[in-house]
Length: 218
Image (cartoon, rainbow, N blue to C red; front, side, top):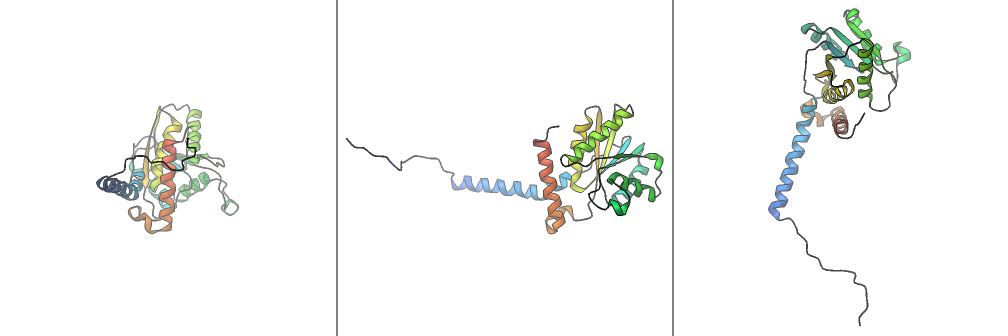
């Protein structure tokens, strides 16, 4: 009688053939190329509804506010809604405590009619800031007894798609949400990997959008 413990044993397994490996590598290469070059452009596509309300969320660059005025004049919007939470820094110098107030002041400084502006001050938010802005907008609509409207979110670059998605979630089925994507002048979206600002922005927004679509639940 023999006793002992076998350390190794022979097993049969299936291995990919060389054509199969080449096919898989080709698929990965094509998918990576599309993700690398086309997905940031997808995140920056406009879907304008031309409804009653044009919404600006967060602290936007001055050129975006200037374009917002032109867009308002060219379409039949009723009101521009400016939103944004507390400034992380600079409020002692600026004399404003929220991003919404900075945006509001920029509009009036540019000569825009303040009677067509609505100011919604936000709070300090550590998580899901865009969605919370959507909730704040929904609260304002409720206060005005507005239960249905078409809203266009004005955003910059590849933040646009996520803004549209999260505002729609926050406002619900009775509201239609579109988006206007202003070109981000900080980098070329089609050559985003050539600048550090482009790399940071595109990677952050890509990860944030995938998280919002797959993992985020209100």
